[in-house]
Image 1 (tube, rainbow, N blue to C red):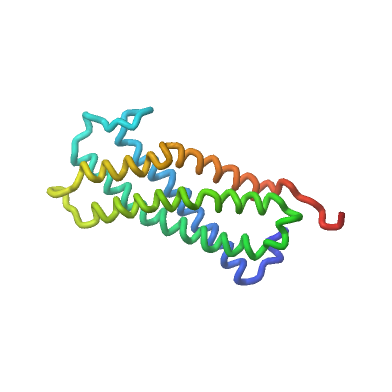
Image 2 (image 1 turned 180 degrees about the vertical axis):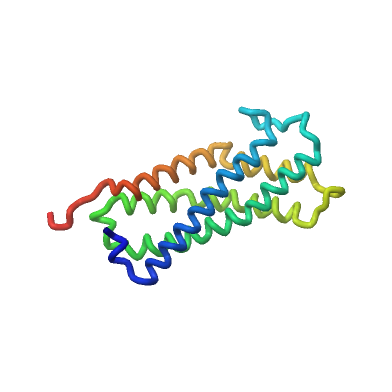
Length: 179
C-alpha cells in the first residue's frame, strides 16, 4: 500500500535499507554463533580445553565478519533514516511508523559503542599472524564488547529491535486520517 506511493529515490532507499538490514541482522546471528563458541555454555568464561590457535582463529573470524556487519548497519541506518524522515507527515496517522523508527534510533548509541570495540578488535588483529597474535588483548577487547552496559546492552537492544520490527510490520496504532 505505501510502496506504490514511493518516489524512485525512496524505492532505492528502501532497497538499500532492506539490503543493509539483511546483512546486519544476518551478520549479527553469524557473529553470535562464532563468538560464543569461545565460552563455556551459559558463562563468559573462556573454554580452557580450546587450543590458543583455535581461539585466535575464532577471534579473527569474529573480527573479519564485523566489517560486513558494520557496513550493513551503516547502510540500514542511513537509508532507513532517510525513509523515516521522508514520511514524517504520516507519523500522526501511523503511530507504528513513528514508534519503530524511534526504537531503532534509541539503540543507535549502544550499537555505536559495540562498533567502537569491533573496530578496536579489527585493528588489533588486522596485521597479526599466528606467530604474533595478541590473544590476551583480543580476548579483553572481545569481553569488553560483550559486556557493554554490564552485559545488558546487547540483549536490550535486541529486544528493542524486535519490538521496532513488530511495530513497522504490523502497522499498529493506525488512525484513519478522515476522522
